[in-house]
Structures are given as C-alpha cells and as structure tokens.
Length: 194
Image (tube, helix red, strand yellow):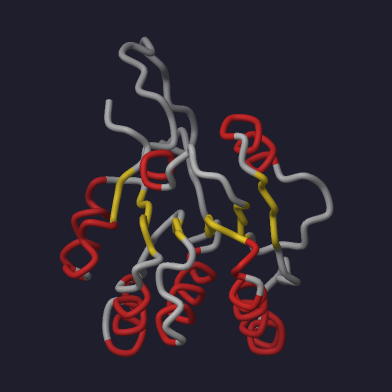
C-alpha cells in the first residue's frame, strides 16, 4: 500500500509548528488537529475565519471573498511561527502559496492542499493560470485528490506540478464486504454540495 502523501511529504519527524487552515470559526478543538498532534508529536494549531454558513450572492461578495484572504494572510504574516500548513480549504492553500511565491518567501513553509478539486469553469483562463502559479510554488509539497481520474486530469491540466498531485483514499480497502442492497435512491454514499 502506498504511503499517504500528507504523512510521507510532510516529514513526520520534523520539529516545528503545524497550522491547519479551515473555513469556519474554530471554537473547540478540531478532531484532525488533536489526532495529528497525538500521532506526530507536532504542535498543531487550527486557524479558521469568519466564513458564512449560508452563501448568498451578497454574502459571497461581502463576507466569503474577503474571508478567503484573511486566513492565508494571517499565516503569511506570521509564517516564521510555522513549519507546515495543511489547507483543509484548497483556496486558502493556493492563496498562501501564491503569496509566498510572489513575495519570494517560497520554501519557508511546506503546504499540503487537501481536497484538490478544479471545477470545469476553473480549468481555463485566469483561474487556471492562478492555480498553475500557486502550484508552482516550492512551498507546495502535495495537492491531494480523492480519486485516480481526478489525479490524471489535474496532472494533465498542470503538468509543471504533476509530481505534487497525489491520490489519497478516504477509507481503507475492504476485501469482502458481502452482499448489500441499495435502497430507494440508488446510491449508498453522497458527499459534497455540488
């Protein structure tokens, strides 16, 4: 079984603080940070922002878009405090990587972008160029996709960063789960909003 890219590429043995960027206000310990801290021994800090629960056209412009900049900017300003950053929200990771590259602070952090999904409308023009620029940062060590087709598509779209794009499964392989019956909707798992 291949090693998980987060574990493999973020070098578990390294000392230093780790930040996890999330798109919600952090009011209690985040389970991922607690588990990561207990497994790795890292000091893990979860940093979130005022991201709205319900996005309307007005909240998107007045709250969501500015919030996309607040968390990465906070990490960028205080980057000397951290050694690793895990971007739960991919936009945060891409913005931070672009900031680091633009201000030539590349390589000062190691960034792992989780849930790397490029929607069809973002596969061309400005967004594609921006994503390509951000992935070109030496700070980005991994962009994690959750299925092989997405990995291949993203490696084709961003050939300069192909070695940074990895697949990680969301569950362990189970050799034989037996026979099961799909009820009503014709599916047994649905995830995401889109």
